[in-house]
Length: 82
Image (cartoon, rainbow, N blue to C red):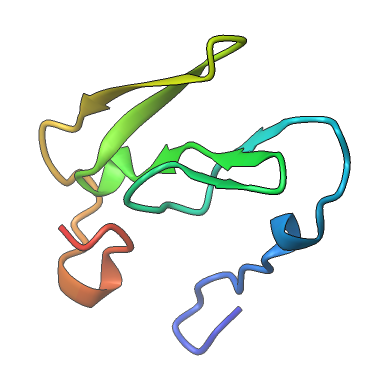
């Protein structure tokens, strides 16, 4: 944990070399992130971002915008920046 009590994220996906596609979240990013056959689909709906669905095998993303920021975090404490 950092000095604010937030978990320190490791960029494990950079080292992923397998053929298995891994779809993951709990590390919000403004847009889906595809790296080394991994896909982060956490676009921070709770922070006012969007809920993301990954359609497989079509390899398509479907989004639903959040109605509001439910977290109460504003500014630099909001990982999505809303």
